[in-house]
Amino acid sequence: MAAAVNGTAPIEPPSELYQGRRAALPLDIVVVGCGLGGLAAAFCLAMAGHKVTILESVATIGEIGAGIFVSPNVTRLLIRWGLETRLREVAVKPKALNVRRWCTGETLSWTQWDDLMAKKYGAPPYHVHRADLHRMLYDLAEPHVNIRTNCRVVSMNPSIPTLMLKSGEVVHADLVIGADGSKSTARHFVVGKPDEPRFTGDTAYRAVLPTKALLADPDLRGLVETPEMTMWLGPERHIVAYNIRTKEEYNIGMCYTDRDPPEEFWRIEESADKMKEEFVGWEPRIQKLLSLIPSTLKWKLMDSAPLETWIHEDGKLALLGDACHPMLPYVGQGAAMAVSPTDFFTSFWLISSLPRNFSKLNLTGGQIEDAAVLGNLFSRLSSRTQIASLLHAYEAIRYERATNTQAFSRLSKATLHLPDGLEQEQRDRKMRAAMEDALKKAGGEVVVSGTDTNTKGNTDHWDNEKRDAIQFGYDADEETEKWWHQRGESEIGPLRVPSTL
Image (tube, rainbow, N blue to C red; front, side, top):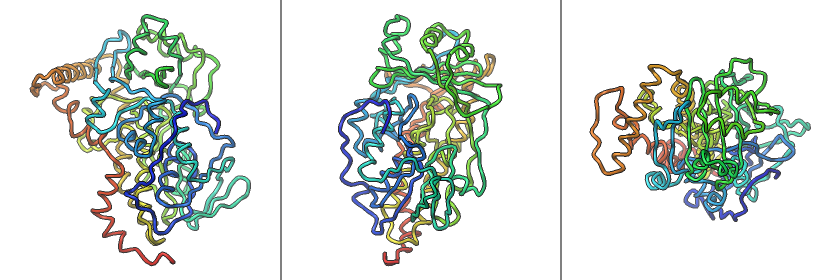
């Protein structure tokens, strides 16, 4: 595996998952794609007792990217899989979320994370370089699965199922999992036609700086010494920045409304001059940060409408992660939802603009959660007659949470990118009020619910412990166990037949 990664701590994979349960009938399973979601799914299905092969199109596996936010709902799974030591070796635990105004740098909102989040939700949050997370998942899965590179899937017959490779080889399987990202080939066969992503109108830049450059500047030193996730909100733009790789590097993600035509998903620019033009007038620290960037990766943000189903009609092909619920980077959703190309984590106050039925949002974790649910369910397989039903169980457990997050990420753009004016001032007042309430509560004061909708903050949404627990306290394995006891035992259990069938 080729990638510039950190992390050499030994991985201590669990001797067993799923309460020691393994499938009575092992399947030959093919996972298309060796990204974060594909590796996680392959590992979980292998631990469930199946023979798993990953087909990856590139000749050399490496994982480009920058920083991502790994929230507690994902961290708990990574720790359960034996990755706690590796995470501590390469990641940074953020102390807080700090939201600032674009032109002055004024703090609009500050939320403590640090050990408080671990105490409340049972696992800590981390900032990690995508390549480091990919490497640890690769090292976790590789001893248990067959990883084949230079195997581009060009066609498949989902009914058998078989996969045709570019080389002409035909690969047979009992089950196919399409984890091949937002440009998924597998999705075309579930939808029944080509289903290309659409340009959203926004473009993102990302860059990674050595923190020694920040530490040398008194105005930037605090961004490293106090490891927070910092967001700057401005008209039609926002920036998110934080430390990664044990504070050796500083990750910066920038998003803006782009009126140029969408030529391609992403491209490397030789110069960062165009990027700097998009953020003229932003506060002095932003100008200093951008001056340190010699070149940057730029890409158009693409989106896909929610699919009606993630499962092919014949019940032998299922999609996972960005192949079925790609996430825009307005919420730090990707890793949990499997990890999106970039992860800008929005603060809890954004939820106040959404209807009540958005309470089951997963703000970060899809692909990893998808993988955990698949492995747990398929540890129960004892008959081929159960395959389709288990796939539909996977969809039933995951669909609402993932689809709501997709919708939330689209709606979040408007709140993040408000032009200066009345709506922006009302948003900022709510955020300040929420911050004041949170600080008072942290200091032991009793916070009384207000009635002024222009100023009240924590009283409705920010301090909604139940809603936060749904997002960050989510445990994919526990949800699967609950679903099985409530429905699976009665609906799928009776489908058991002798395993010789």
